[in-house]
Amino acid sequence: MVEQRISLVTLGVADLARARTFYERLGWQGQEVEETVFFQAGGMALILWGRGKLADDAGVEDRNPDGFGGIALAHNVRSRSAVDEVLRDAVNAGAELTQPARETFYGGYAGCFTDPDGHVWEIAYNPDFPLDQDGAITIPDFGAP
Image (cartoon, rainbow, N blue to C red; front, side, top):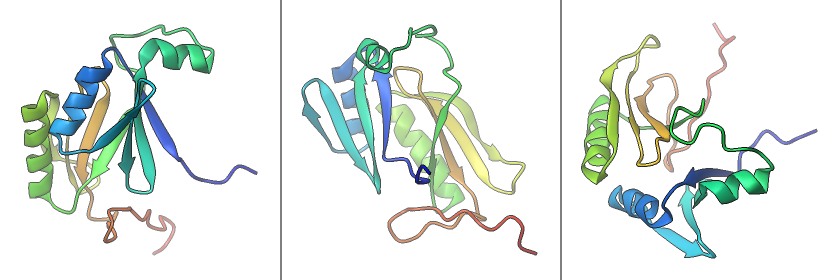
């Protein structure tokens, strides 16, 4: 049985220095070891590594280096105004705003940007996913009345 947990998310990047600079402009603090940048992100880590190296390590062919990779990272915040603030900070750091903040179908408020390598980030306020003191979300019991 595999434990229900994600420990690391590794993003393949074209230019490690550019990617690191972008995330540091967001206010993140990283450490570089052997051409890999590590950011502590709550109870997990975000890793930046050369895209080709990541593909080789995984034993896959990099088929779509400049398009949507079928995944989005999400950063939940505590308020609607925080969504606007994070999106503004991301754009100021060099992100491309791909979806301005708007009301969502689930009663929240969210918008999206891409980092310099095209990785999609959703910034969301979801009143049904409360954040604890250190920012971890709790998925509600969807079957509860």
